[in-house]
Length: 330
Image 1: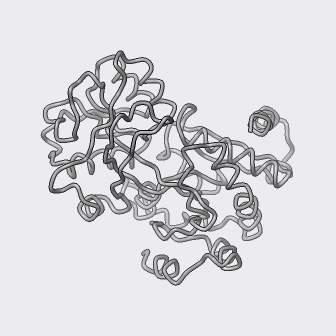
Image 2: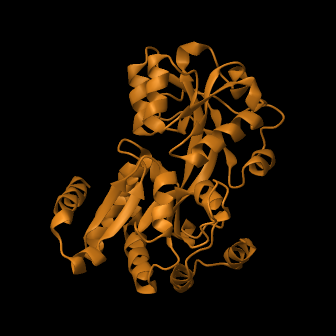
C-alpha cells in the first residue's frame, strides 16, 4: 500500500511537466482536505487505478465537496468521492445552484457514519443534551454535512432554534474549535484520523452523541433529509473513542463522474476498481462495508452512468431494483 501511495505522490510531482496528450490521460479524483477520510481513501483508489491501468491517477484535495462537485460536473475533475446526500442535493439544485443534472454515479463504495462529537468530560450522552449548546449546523465547504447535522438534531428531538448554531469552513476548523473549547459539538465522520487526533489531544478524549427519542427512526430522518438512515456503532479496537453502542446517522459514499465521461473510460476505471476493491477494503478499515456485489447498491440519489450500467449488467449485479431506482430520479 505504501508503495502505491508513493507512486501517486510521484505522479502529482510530475503532473506539472506532462504534455497535453498525457494530461488528457490523467485521472483526477476530487476529495476533501488532507487528514479526512475521503482524502485517505481517495489516495488509495488513485494508487490502485494507476497501478492497474498504467496511467497517472492523482488525488486533488479541496476545502470540501461543495467546491469540487461543480468541477466534476464540468469535467474539470475526472472523479469524486461524494455522499449520496451531497450529490443528490447538487443534482436537484438545493444548494442555490442550477441543477447539476449531468452528475452520475460510477460505483457505491461504503456507508459513511456521521455523529456529533463532543468532549467526553462534557457529561453529554445523547443528541437531546445539546439544548443551548454551541453546535456546528452549517459547513460552508461541505454543504451536505451541515444539513446532516441539522437532520440529526431534529431526529434527536432538538429544534434548530434550541441550539446556538455555528458555521465553519470545513472539518479541521470544527475539530480545532472543539479542542480549543470554542465549540460544544461538531458533526463529523466516525473514526476518521481527525477524530482520532481529537481523542488523543483532548484530556479524557471524545464521545459521539447517540440519536435517541421518539423521532429517532429511519423513516423520520430519511424524510428530513433523503438518503440518511440510522446505524448503530459498537465498541471496536479500531474505535477507542466508542466505549458503548451509539446510534449515529449514515449515508452511502459513491464514486461519481460526469455523464460526458467517455464510455470506454468508465469501463476501464470500473474494471480496475472492481478488481482492486478487496485489497482496498483490507488496506482501509473505513471501507469495511464495501463489497464488489454492493457496488450497485440502490441507495443512489443521482443516476448511474450508462456505461456503468452496462458494466454491472455484464457482471450480473444490475437488478430490476436498480433500474427502478434510476428511473425514479427526476
